[in-house]
Every structure is written in C-alpha cells, then in structure tokens.
Image (cartoon, rainbow, N blue to C red):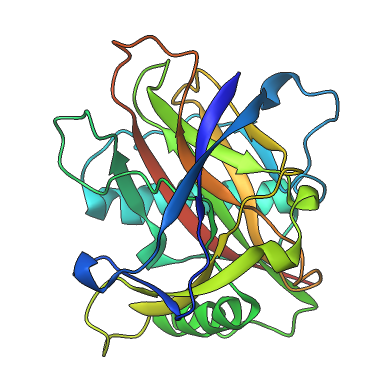
Length: 265
C-alpha cells in the first residue's frame, strides 16, 4: 500500500520547533505518497544493525496505564531489561524525558499528538549531550565503555487495527545530505534537556518505508536512534502515518514510547 509521508521543505533560515509556542515554529512540509512495506513479511530479516529496527514480542504489566508515575517506575524497568536482553548492553538507563503517551487526532483522550513529519531525534552532538544529562539525572557513573547507543521503543496500547501508526525508514536508503538540523524547544529553556537539536529530512525517491500493521499491546517496535560506532548512520527516520488499510472506523491510536541509553564493553 501507499502512505502519506510529510517531508521538510528547506528554508534559508535555521529551522526551529517550539512545542510551547507554535508561532515560533518555522518548519514547512510537503506531502509525498510513498510505498509502505509490511515489515512483518519482508524478504530480509529485520536487524538493529541493518534496517535499524525490529519487532519484539513482550508482555507488559503496565503499558496500558495512564499513570506517569507508574510508567516511569515500572514500564521503564520492563523496557530497560528488554533492551539489555535484546542488545547485550552492559548498562541501560532510561531517558526520563523520553517517556511519552500519544493519542491520535480522533481520540477523545488528551495528550501528545502524533509527530507527522519524517525526523531523526538525535545528532552526534545532541546524543552525546543526552548521555551526559541522563547519567547526571540518574547519578550514574558508567565504567569505561567502548560504545554507547540510544534505542527507542514504541508500543501501541489501542486495539488493532490502528488508524495511524509508526512508519520507519531503512537507514541504508537515506543520504546524509537529505537531512537538515533543527532546534527543538519543549519547555523552559533554562531547564537542561528542554532544548536540543534533531534532524528532519527532505524527500528522497530511494527511501524505503516500512510499518507493522495491526500491532497488539504485546508487541514492541525497537529502533536505534544513534550508535557511537556508526555516528553517520541514518538510524532511524520515522514518523506517524495513517494506515492505508485500516477501516475508517478503526479505534483511534494510542501508544507509549520511551528512550534508553545503552553502554557496551
């Protein structure tokens, strides 16, 4: 099937998003219809080191909760263990500011809306900065490490089929000169972590987009956001996308996502 991906139109000035005051946001988008491949049935097995994303079966005791305190404590603990087992990392820390509940535009629930533009959450500089912030917040001094990586997890908490869901682009199909840095402000600028730099992307005809239709609450999409041993890899361009095969009366999507820093010997 084909889906609509919103790419960024380059501007002469520095790009900026301010989630508190959208009058300060200057991003401009253009919609492109692109093929969406069902990642469940791809010809090539999925790998964090190839495409940059995988689908993992995982039963959570708390993922459906709307209590952020419960999620910060118990869901982060569940996902920390999963990331450690999946990647072989020595230490895994949750990025506390990366825990988000999202609800589709048709949902009666109030919360963060889907991000409907193709983007990458980190640059090399911002990834290193978040490692400093996360280890400081957690009062954790990592032993010497050879490598660190940032992983993101995405889980649908609404019943399938989702009216919109997560689309991911095979990092090998994106060129570095197609990406553009932009500044992000999510809260008071004097608070560490509320301002950072991420990347958006121009349209590329070679981009290979994938999604997982009919996700259940016992499935988690895990994707690599940054890897210090391959800092120039384009892992993983992603965006919310309407499922072209979902019925018009599909239950509005809800999801929980989280981010983690992993250290390797």
